[in-house]
Length: 139
Length: 60
Image (cartoon, rainbow over all chains, first blue to last red; front, top):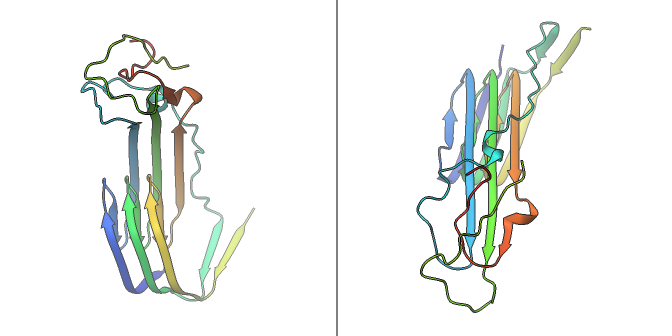
């Protein structure tokens, strides 16, 4: 048996990138996000980037495979779970804000973060890539 | 092993949150199983100082 969730007031500004604001019970939540974050000192983007996968996006993450034990006894002396107010600015990247009960939550996020800076602080951005140098990844 | 949990009264006042991101969950309620994983890769070579070249992962 699950408790009743009561929230009197909620104020949130932004939900973006597959985030969910759920009011009410749910059974199963599967949240997945993959992010390739590239920051460059100059405004420059090569169209084909990100089409090939980095290992961080494919490597399996070890998972604790647990199931709900059947010899756990929950006694809800009060059937209510109450919150006066929630102030939330933003939910992003497959985040879930959930008022109500659920059963199984599975979340996984994979982020690759790369920063590229220019050689000289004031060198202008090249209009075309001059070299074929490659940035290789360890396995 | 038997495991007993007694949930007594739960009354929360005001919650102030800036952000919930990256497959995280903010839950007001009960759950049976929560399984969250995260991989964040920013290795030394992820800070590249030099000519701007396209990103090319290994094996291509």
